[in-house]
Amino acid sequence: MHYYTIILVIMALMLGASAFAEKLKVPVPVLLIVVGMIAGFTPSMPAIELDPEIVMLIFLPPLLYDAAFNISAKDFKTNINTISTLSIGLVFITTAGIATVAHYVIPGMSWPLAFVLGATLSATDAVAAIGITKGLGLPHKTVTILEGESLVNDASALVAYRFAVAAVTGVAFVWWKALFDFLIVLGGGLLVGIIIAKLLGFVLRFFRDNAMVVISLMLLMPFVTYLIAEHFEVSGVIAVVVLGLNMSWLSKNRFPEHIKQQSRNFWDVNIFLLNGLIFVLIGLQFPLVLKRMETNQIWTYIGYAAIITVVTFLIRLIRVLMQQFNLQKAFEGKRRISEEALFDSKTSLIITWAGMRGIVSLAIALGLPLSVNNHHPFPLRNEIIFLSIAVVLFSLLGQGLTLPWVVKKFGKGKDVANTLPDIEKVSSQD
Image 1 (cartoon, rainbow, N blue to C red):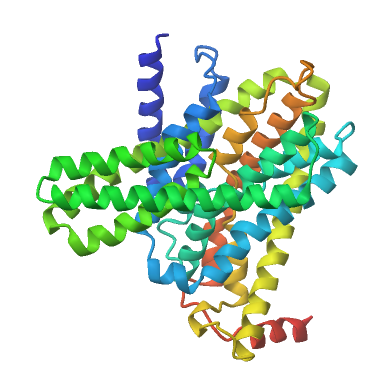
Image 2: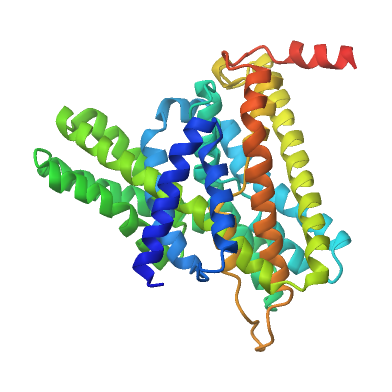
């Protein structure tokens, strides 16, 4: 089967599954993953090996840019405390939590390897969160927190992963150097994003009446921004997010209405196709990784993946509830917390449930080096990849299928600000 035929088959599967998902009232990403898995087990379907660098370049820039472009800058700023807590602090807490469980539960999983697995699975996925929560009628604040977290946490996870792999390959870990490098990676991405946004804004204002030039430049620049940032070894993710936020402001304030409408239609189609392809490709990878595992290990490692999924969920739930309590305490102490930034326990549960793993975890896992510096094979590489994909599938299928029920059960109404009484009610019932 030629490559162009494979692409057409995958596109047809994606379009058909997306259409049926609407009819079956099933989250589109969940059905796409199942279809991808079924197609992957089909004998006539050739193996499709994903290059992680290509995956990150093709999918991440446009999807992150679109999410940043459409997020409300005002709401993002209002909820910046929660977003930064989840996208930076929770990422490192999750990395450590998964590493601890993996080290003590999985035979042969050394501390460095355990931290590689933890970093791989530490970040929630913007594509999964947006794709599955879309159309559920979630409160606007909840969506802003989920999208804002997913826009930033990829950078934190990639930094944690970089240092974990360095430890496996024999590079000494120095905490102050790690912190400095982390700040350089984030700050450098921020700087690259601002510079390119300013340059692009100047060019777009000059061509603002030419719809084709404006739309083409806005399609091209997320990829260019990502590549430039990665070339300088800073965060391409942060750079693209900053670009998207700046272009959103420029579009709302400077572009003619007809260009905004054409651009919106163009991006809607692109994002629909990219979203669909990602989830089909995730499903296609599972049969490939399954074949590389020893038969007597498969169910054991599926059990490990289930344990890690539950632990990851519990860590997130505890941290989100702590953030809810901390915000309420800060607000009552008359610190710089607005009432709009508060949320209740029901919102905490929904934010927790919507924290799914996805394409970034998959790409990071597949990007593991084949060997360490002394030319020995990278230890437990297949096992780490298998665990990562299994956790992604457990997360997307388990939480994705049950999230609509959770939203329906705990309501779609306004975010409640008065949270301490809510906690006290739960405590009194217990």
